[in-house]
Image (cartoon, rainbow, N blue to C red):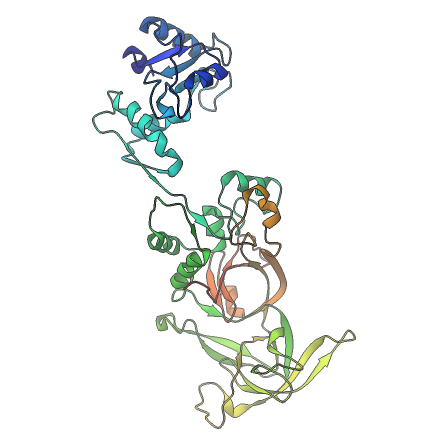
Amino acid sequence: AVELIKKGLAYIDDLSADEIREYRGTLTEPGKESPFRNRGIEENLEMFEKMKNGDYANGEKVLRAKIDMASGNINMRDPVIYRILHEAHHNTGDKWCIYPMYDYAHPVEDAIEGITHSICTLEFEDHRPFYEWVLNNLDDFKAAPTKQIEFAKLFLSKTMMGKRYLKKMVEENYVDGWDDPRMPTVAALRRRGYTSEAIQSFCEAIGVSKAQSVVDIAMLEYAVRDDLGSKVPRVMAVLNPIKLIITNYPEDQVEYMESENNPDNPEMGSRMVPFCKELYIERDDFMEEPPKKYYRLFPGNEVRLRNAYFVKCVDFVKDAEGNITEVHCTYDPETRSGSGFEGRKVKGTIHWVSAKHAVDAQVNLYDYMMEDQDYDKTNFLEKLNPNSKVVLKNCKLEPSIKEYKTGDRFQFLRHGYFIIDTDTTSDNLVFNRIVQLKSSYK
């Protein structure tokens, strides 16, 4: 700033903020020069030093760049570059009573830090002439000034991206903090389980544009699925359990069924999953009166238990309220998976977890932040999705899950991709859903 003053390119102005605004002119009318614009260099230097030292009150004087009050770009009509503010700074304390304006600090800081290209959003396009003017008039930076390049902001469908709106959601407890997995922050995406590779792939796919548009969030989810598909192990998890009892299975017998960790990546090998008389299956995998083309369990129907046996439903038990509490089946020992049995076929295959060996867990099912594809920011809180977080307790997982740690990712068969959350404790295993298995993006 002192260099600009010495070059006659900056001056101290006594006009008030309202007067500066009035003198600036409009988009169709040029501005007019301040009566203080032609102060001498020495007087300007002396007054700037007094501003720094706190000799003037807030708003009494400002330092303005001397450019062109008739410029077609209002940002070039002698913008303010320093103001007086009697506030303590976290680094310098009360030593300095002046603060630079953003448009001035931006190019100077970029140049000091050796930034070659300053990537900004489109609203900075009209500010670029001043950015370039500052660097071209400072001797230390004019030889190789930083280049400012503008591009459109990223907007995702069904997601609030505006920082001040996200701040409101955090402060008013609509979400559980800045790292809430529904938020579009880096901390939240990490906690949600999105990988850096998936985010990079997504960014490469959408490219950089100067046209403002909304990107379908399904495209981001596609990138996540594509990245995790061959990377993570697949495990069996029953999120809404109902007990299945195999009535003709030996009472104390336990068998271990071989299961591939990831069929898309044979190098990940296999694991042995315990199987016994009492299992948990998904409540949705049994219906007393099924509709047409329902191929899972119902009275008299036979299905395959994944990597195990055929079982046939022979009975079920209800409680006093009419809710089904148990499904009773018989199994055919000749139909063990891998045995080569070809005597008959079944149309349905369901997953399961051994009741004796099951690991209890909490599963957080995260969905889109906003209900509508498009929304009005002025009433965005009314458009929040009330089902964006559903917490499931007492889910049942196969015991191999105990070998993993916080941050590890999985595919829960038939459900989606999940990550062990940071809220996990020694006695409470917590998972977050990353994305569902099915994609709407094409």
